Image (cartoon, rainbow, N blue to C red; front, side):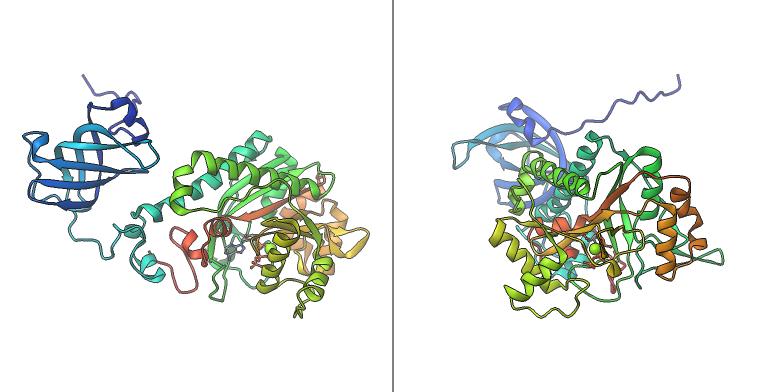
Length: 445
Ligand code: ATP
Ligand code: MG
């Protein structure tokens, strides 16, 4: 008979969370030898599994089995042994395995170039990034990206519960959406095209189709400087929603998203939160101030002399973070009504004061993590604004189909995944929150 495939998923290991069910029984698990200490008649093996490390002990008295002398760190193994319970400091149970047998599935050719068996990888950030495929094996380091999964999952789950549709928009585009000098140009069969700086123009088009859409995907910014907050490729969590009454609807949705994410992290990612000592904020409400109010606070309260009255520099963002903490006991603060001249062409100007826009940024612990706002939905208003900004509307005819053929009032935002991760985990450098970061000097590994 020919072979058939039934779709039965492979389960070859018992997760630590199930060990209680197997107390005093023999089980077989798979994993990698993370750390090993061999004495003549006694050994400790720390086995690294998908999300945990499991302590396994060997003593000659356990069985007739004898440890293979060729077993070393980073060997992939199938390990059989008895689950036994020990006591933790707080009276709970901690399980370990008494080794009865080890089947070595693979041997590393060389020992790792950096020490990954200690709590923290033992090298500087640059070396760590050079060896990321290896350094990510360190339990603490890999926990960062499990934790980051939790953030994306929270974003997705919450928005889906609010009737959003998940989309994927092209990353090779005819024009940039966000302006500025940070576009990556690309030769596309002899034509000049650009890597997407954001999904902005497409997510707007899709508001007229699905009303509420979101995307979690990479975006590209040719940042010409080497800073601790910029990557050249980062993950943008975007959403866009139609039929809004104002941009407050967007800020409310974002606050709901963030509350959901924080709760998910505290519950389903508890081990990672503890291992990383993540500082998860309690969010009840987020204070809102206007851009010009913020500038006044900076000048009056902090005696700061702004170099640019159209935007904030990093130091100003830090001071506003301090202000939010002191004044409102909040790690977050929304700043609204940014000057029209600093916001992209799709931003709606405030009809009461067109020098300013119906837009906002969200600062978290003193750094921008989100820009958002209401967009222009009227065709004539959008064409007029483009012309005023020196743009040629004819070059944007596909984008303007949205407006020409009718669009609901709408708005949305972009939230930088690595920036949010960075500040939840207290990192000084955004690169630590990117699995394989791309910056001005780095395209490998
Ligand atoms: P900044 O002023 O901090 O450079 P921006 O205003 O240029 O950011 P936006 O275009 O508003 O960035 O992008 C939305 C969000 O995407 C930002 O709030 C931030 O969280 C994130 N972000 C933007 N650029 C980068 C980057 N180069 N690396 C990592 N995250 C970024
Ligand atoms: Mg911004």
